[in-house]
Length: 535
Image (cartoon, rainbow, N blue to C red; front, top):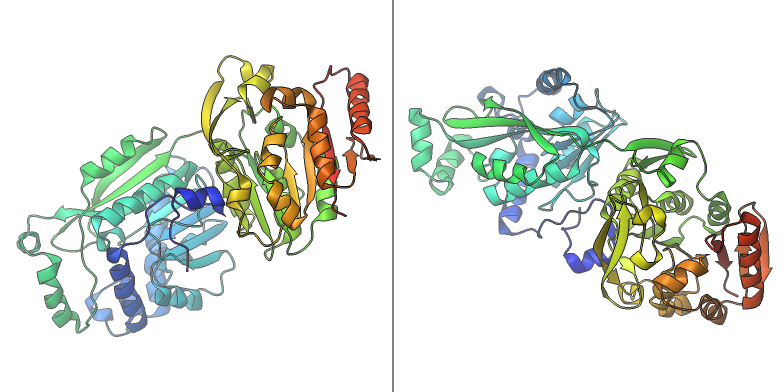
């Protein structure tokens, strides 16, 4: 079962990538789940496509799936005229039932996820579609699309589903369609806007589901029956207006709901600039095309800090737990996720929303469901802090420690949540490695993690940047090293050429830092990367 959507506090603790912010389930959702669970057990194919002559298990498998191919092929042909969707990596079938549309989508997309509220429907879908490796079915008992990352789905499709969901829940799901829609992607969804002007429509307008359900039970000879619910198109337009990157491509009448109902179908495109998808050591990594630092280097085929990556590969093994403080785009989080495997856990702490979106999409595409995100900056006091950002870089820093690029015109100062990791990780029973790179905030972040470091004794990889420490943390870099040596027996400098230099004193580390800056003519702006191992 997918987890219910978390509250703000649980987001701070760390949740799987793609967990929505929709409120937890209510009685309407439980009722919906109960009804479709019963229908999925009783006559699943007819419950999905309710033709009168197919009741009682009379749908033939191939005939049933042929209707899905016709529907999907038609919708994609219409969108192809607009050159959309721009990519065909991931499609989402919302309300997938027995997989009628999901199976058809699998012929057009690299990967397809079908979500359904009913465990019995998911079981049927898996049984009928087990021959397709690129098709996955998940139970989604939440009021959101949990487990689906922001801005990651190229095609969202929902047909004859929203019409059976109470309007408040259905509006929440449409908001989720907009959340997960990737740049260049399209969401196509059908809904009922009300009744039509026919005699049947006028009857439906007068009689609520409370009165219609007994009639349905008699006509269908079933105790559990699905209901019809209308969505106001004006409410959808108001919702769409809150998403400037989205555009309504098509809005047309749709007759799939049957006589008496005024059905509508919307096609909504995400016109935002698409991120770059790169390959690094066989892993997909998404970066902003405008990122002139980390993104540009990765696009040019350069490895990101290979001297640090080498240590992570050496230190991490199957089932380990890694904490990545200042995860940025997630290059090291993704590497760690591969090293620790599905039995392990990676907790990525990143305050900049744009970076989290890219990290979550990368994790999802690589199948790293054991990566969790904490949307905050790590510090020694909970609250809010300010960070300087700029469109030309994925990096950020406290304003006092911001370099020329972050201070340049076009940048912005943003407020982000600050958390004390000791308070968030109280229940953590294992921690094998901590990596911290937060542009001078390392003393604050590690001060807020000290109890956990003493309790669980992980290896530590930290950036040491005296210039930034003095400005961001307002402290003495030598005192920071003293604090590290109070926790660990020695410090190993990870030089960029791959050499490792073990130091037993603060003086040795400071001398090595000065020498490295003098050799690079960096005037104190060059940082060192340090490795500390428990006894």
